[in-house]
Amino acid sequence: MKLISFHHQGRASYGVVQQGTQVLDLGAHFGTRAPDLKALIAAGLIDEAARLAASAPGTLELAQLVLDPVIPNPGKIVCVGLNYGEHVRETGREVTESPTLFLRVAESQVAHGDDIVLPRESTKLDYEGEIAIVIGEGGRRIAEADAWKHIAGYACYNDGSIRDWQTATPQWTAGKNFWRTGGFGPWMVTRDEIQDGQVMTLVTRLNGVEMQRTTTDKLIHSIPRQIAYISAFIPLCAGDVIVTGTPGGVGAKRTPPVWMKPGDVVEIEVDAIGVLRNGIRAD
Image 1 (cartoon, rainbow, N blue to C red):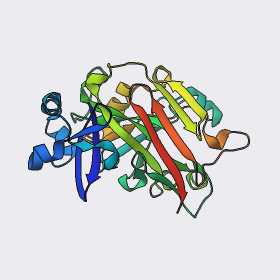
Image 2: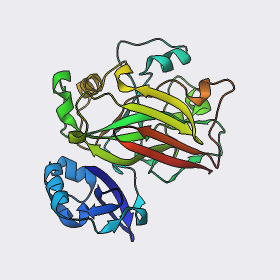
Image 3: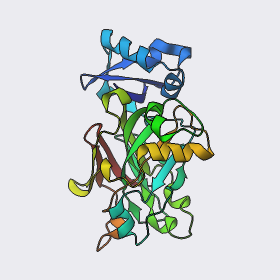
């Protein structure tokens, strides 16, 4: 299934995208049992939602909905940095034995089709195409061998970065959390649609020009490794998001550097998921 979060006529809800253009409103069906997508995942209702979607046609048009980030209210967003060799090399760093982690906050995200915001404090807005995983079954100290079953699904992610703020200190928090700089969407593809360990192709395009391309078999720290490592120090919960890393080709490391500017369009495409598309506007 492709699961989205959205607003329609002033009401927040979530649903299943059917036949590309129709949406079955799951929020209207589940009501207080699962008022949002995170609650649906936490309640273990994805299979029930799939059975409903197989028998009930959608009544909403996707084009008429205002999309939200896939999980609008994640408990935590854990991002993995420096997780493809080409990106490590272009930054002049070295591969580390353990994953490099930082956190994003929900307010730093926008949905598919919404504009990423270039803040007035900087002109150095960069793209980072990534794959996000959404946690289904939570846990602490999850073993790598068990990690796949803790995944609810996958989405595209743009870990938009304000580079001068990111590099101003050894800590990256400010540059990674400017308001409305990260894209998350367009939907979550449930785990049953993507084989565990399936090699996915990730491509970033800026104004139609390919800037990044990689495959997930090139991850330094695999998805199971990331889940095991993160859950060793903090319990993972349903609806938590792990953003798995960006490949080489970021704008900051090009000659000359390439910064996103108002009027640009950035796309993150993952072959097994879809295309996340965002415009850029000035704050």
